[in-house]
Length: 362
Image (cartoon, rainbow, N blue to C red; front, side, top):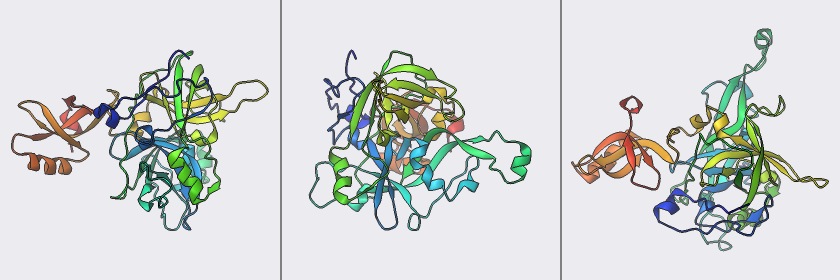
């Protein structure tokens, strides 16, 4: 490993907050702790199954990508929420779960340095209220479908999720995503997640520990590419990394040297009998539909987000970008007549932007 990485959130870039490389002395392939409560910890979060009685089981990792509450993770981290709804799987369908009556997924938001004082504020538990997956038509005989076999199934191990954020919830940072970066054998990548989460019940103190010391990073070298998956049992397009990725890291981001997320931790083979560990990352560039799971991102321009911009056409000052025209119009009214609203693509954390085509506006 020639050099350590310095991935950062857009918010940290905007604040010109310098970061030292993570794990400068870390052994390649081995997990090391990341103590970063105001950086990556604000964007990369643990995922839990919360039950109606309030108990929690750790299931994996997710990460925030657009500044508006959209996160990405591995589909298998949240697929248990579909167990009672398998017959509902259709292209572009939305499966909703009554979280007061059923086990549901929730992300646990960090809240700075308030550890060990009054426990975890309830606002830090953000229930996931939408899960989107890439749905494919099953390779089944038409007669089987007529007899009631499931026609559609979830494809690659990748999901887009949104969470309900309480007004008192801590703010989420966002990490940059590149949907087109193509991996090459021999390149170094950096995965981040919560390795000790393994679908076991945790008490309040154990859960709280993840807000302070549960995040780990792992460097690894790409050793193989599987753009068509690894057979029928493992059809997700992945690249292979020589590294020890433990189960709770599933759904965590995989960064390239530029600090961009280019894949998601999917599954791994732990070291055994002198053989190194092998991790497999769902690769965005191998999946044409991957960008559909983060529709607010500009897939053609890495690190850019699409939305309704409020800008001054005289000096091209971008005052704000909102997810809806109504919100943008409210912001424009406060700024005055010099500002207008238009569909834009802009660099998160900066002022650079370009006007979008009119057919995207609504």
